[in-house]
Image (cartoon, rainbow, N blue to C red; front, side):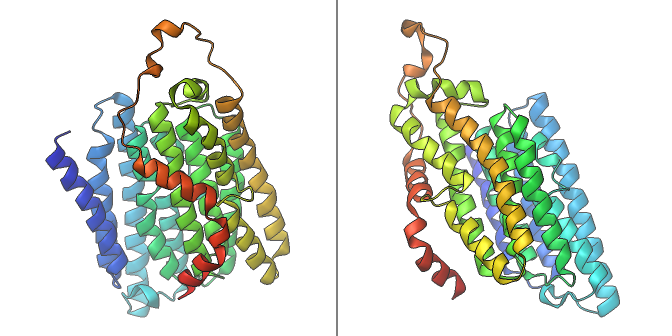
Length: 348
């Protein structure tokens, strides 16, 4: 793709998200979401491969459905209450429909089924944008909606952590595993959204760091399924040594960064007298941990069956830009001691 076109599309992505962040009126927020969707479609379809075009079409239809439903909910709210302000959304029906529309846009269960299929059809760079940047604008709106029925967010959260963990168990494609991982992490954020928005932001921040580093590792190794991970050792031994820590951080094991949000969310749910919900969420985290351990095993404890050392293309040095990967890897592994600092910064 022409670099000028790529730059225009990426700037449009940033513009759409910024408009949604800055808006207090529902129509302006909706317009930002639409700019966001339209800007990423050419990036998704740039491969001109039938699979990529299919993924782009599915994504467009899903996002258009979500946007139309959100517009319907906000118009209904304006009709019933006379308010277009995001923070003044008070009618139970309109609020519930808006939450479901935004859940569809980010890929929360049970409205998640488009996400694995779409992500599988994209290259890893576009998949990274879809898994990280595209979650920001809908999440900014979810944070501003005050749900009239607290049970809906808890139900969406538990369903997402359960289905996100369960769906990834049987997958061999890395992009599909990352899609289910995304659904599970979003479930954790939604669980605690109404009790502690600052904790949801902290969870989103750590999710973005961990997902970025994981996608960049897969991109550096050119890995798209579990079997291709076995060749990582020959390509980048040092990175292959660190990658299990990144994956286990995604799984939420101490003393890694990923443990921090899970620990604080379980603590907050227990404070709100929701110990059964906290227990169920902790058990569903074990499902996700299993498939991260599978990836760790495939990457570090198995060897590629190809032993013809003279013709191995992966021994050539990589020319990819790796500074971002280095920064994100360090953050993914070592942010846990900064938990009090980050919590304080996000509650200011």
